[in-house]
Amino acid sequence: MADHGVTEYAKADGNDYAEHRGTYQFFTKLTLVGTLALSCFMVAFAIGGANGHWGIFTIGTLASVAACAIGLASEDGKPKLLFGLLGVLVLALIITS
Image (cartoon, rainbow, N blue to C red; front, side):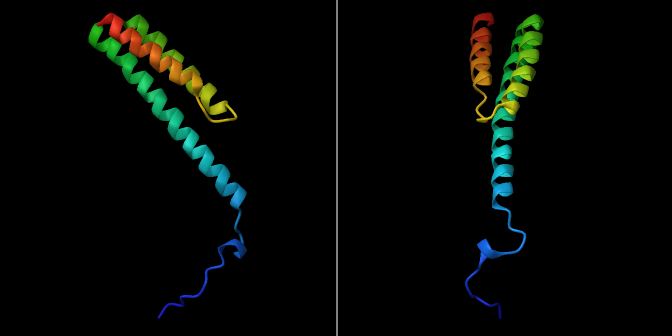
């Protein structure tokens, strides 16, 4: 039978909570930035593919790559520029439809 004693996680050898927390924060930042960048790309692709405005698609794709790099490099992990870019691309999709 297994021993059901109290687990002493905080005192285990090799426990690096600060590194674990940093890895988790980077993962959540990467997930948020990646999801927003992919959303920007998909909206730009809808503008270019469905409506034939390939110039807007190119500008939107390049802007989403640049905003993704800025979002990943930010300290707070909040890609504010990607939120704005997504809004502008959705507005462009509405206008060009």
